[in-house]
Length: 243
Length: 316
Image (cartoon, rainbow over all chains, first blue to last red; front, side, top):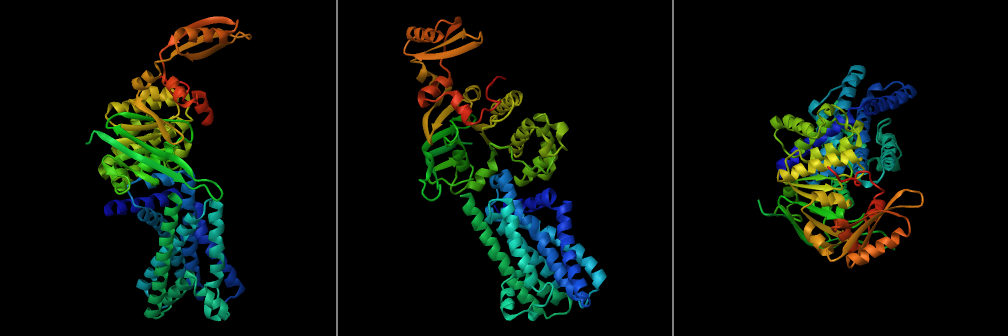
């Protein structure tokens, strides 16, 4: 049974990547949107360009991972294609993890491209590669889980897009992407601590510019907890909808 | 393999319908068996509970109560094992628009664990069988409705299932596509695949099925072989009268009565002075049985489904 789950998980992710993700609109959304935002802020406040690299990577990961993920399940439910997967010999958590994996793999691919360009433009500091890779992996899973939860929580594609943006856009401005969380008013700092993107930006900053391993590890634990909770919620929500 | 492919015992499915509305009892305590190798027809109007029954037997939904086994596996406890051995063709053709015909079949095989070395050859075999070999690299979205239906059946057969569920397979197809699909279903039966076929086309059930269950409002009102069901109606005489109406167009009426004399008299009353073309006594059809059991005519079923081009001619 586990072998069936693992096999289906992998093929569902690859099918989603081929059918939905590697399409020009998604690639441009994952790459251009974060660049546009970062450029706008950099022009407004020229100077600390390198400070923007963690935020740029975090945004690429957030949008690259969750944009399609947030709509793919509700889309397949509307076309009936999700039923094909539900009829296959795979358990629901494995099915959903396959979906999540597709989003995470796409987000990581886009973000890797942004990382290469970013390091070339901004230059690297004291990069801790192992922690950088771990941060990208765990963050991708957390954001894909967020996308999955959005996708199963609604009934229509436009609702999924609205809900995803309702979550992502405030998060983008409150998570230290454009200005450090420490510089925010105390109430907003408290709010920022509730948002997973805050921990991604923090862990990326630490792994790119010589932060302490303890701090990065703590950020990753929080992100892993987000990923787990959101994934479990998504599985339960989908199971309830299908009952 | 067991002689019995499906056993359903007192299956009930109730759907909540929201505040202020009573729950919908879609399936209301049905029991039946499907024998291995037969084509079992599940015949009923729209909303009778046909699709709800398939969904319970294939793990897409849980029975509210009752129990069922498919290929000797319990649907409540061993649904993953069941899924490995059954194929399902849902009412709508639901393959992936973004993938080609070949990619869709290969993906189906990947999900069911068909060995990598066999996938391409098996996919080409299926494409050839369903006369889609020249469409192998065409996106599913670009295929005609009949081709989509055929490819959906092909995908359900990708892992060589022992049991195939076909939910309204010819609904919405043109006559030629429907006829072609019925030929394929007959071939599968000849190859020993057990087939559970839901349909609202009486002629389709009559042509393809070994046994038929008639389901109305969630309950099975009759279950027998076609001959057995017709025997039920054979106590009645059926006469068909053809005549030309005032506009000189041909009209046909069917009359059922206790004996032939009464049926003929009633048929002639229907002609009512118009020009008589023919009058025939008929063997009872599945439609006669259906009308007698449910009080509905075939035209009611078709109207409920919005017509349906494929059902009118079940030939081939």
